[in-house]
Image 1 (cartoon, one colour):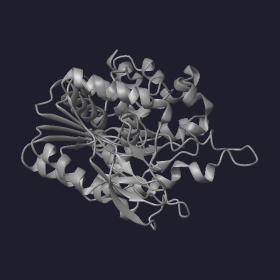
Image 2 (cartoon, rainbow, N blue to C red):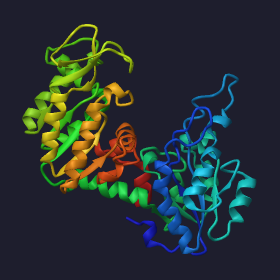
Image 3 (cartoon, rainbow, N blue to C red):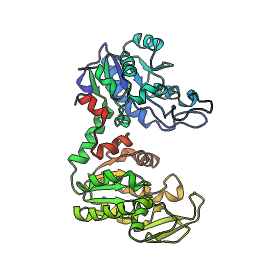
Image 4 (cartoon, rainbow, N blue to C red):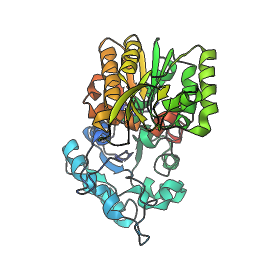
Length: 404
């Protein structure tokens, strides 16, 4: 696996695919979570320290899927210029900005870069060729640098022009940045070299989103803990009364099959004993606590309950490897955040005693950051869908094209 550590960038212009798809304030458009930008800083600084220059390319949102009422692209909302000041601040250099990611003007700006200078390109997804993986668009991007570095793990599962197709134009001069290298190393540690007992904590809304990863984990884990909205489909499948809780009624048979498969594989499959209920999906809701097999009509489970937190925490405390993907409830609402916070605390405690813990998936990452615990676990992934697909055993184009 070739990384930036294997190369001296002195006098080179590196074209670096980063993931600056960060959340913005809806009114000021300022960056509200700079985690992904901070993650890319070491790669960029390494190139600059070698005496190279850097051209940064990224996407922000899906502008071509969210056109304005008149059918045009909302450049005000989706411009990467919103990230410029944050990137400059974190790098400690004044980053230049190109008003397009391709074209004559952009080519001139890139060609004039001096060692130690950085140019940020405009949103790649303003062009259809990016998501379509068009070779001609990739060729235009490739002309902006003489070394290609992919450091955008969050998009590694997409065969887009800037994440996969572009690599063919850099034979012998393509490599991973630190983000990509660390993501791969830590994901492989989980899936190939996990020390036992290995516990996976799976949350989120839908069973259907996690089928493949649960099946893969059954081959590797000692314990699988289930929380979040997906748990209620299992309880319904077991004949429980789940009130108004979220349920995928078309996945009840699948839930039964997964429970049976867990028994056959020898993995211990744990569902939460109780839930914190709300009489509506709102932080102002009335709350109650109930056994998950007998939730009253008109009430919905919005967080795992105190007995579940205690039971899950005990399992986590005895684990040597921990994977957490998906929150235990609607942690964005204060009344329904205790379960997710309790699990986060248990993971931190286990990590402090020597366990290896990986937090992966957008909502899990958001939760661990919200609780201020990101620096107290072993690794926090920046990849959401990419990490899931990697754990599901799929081939990721952004990785394949660098390795080939």
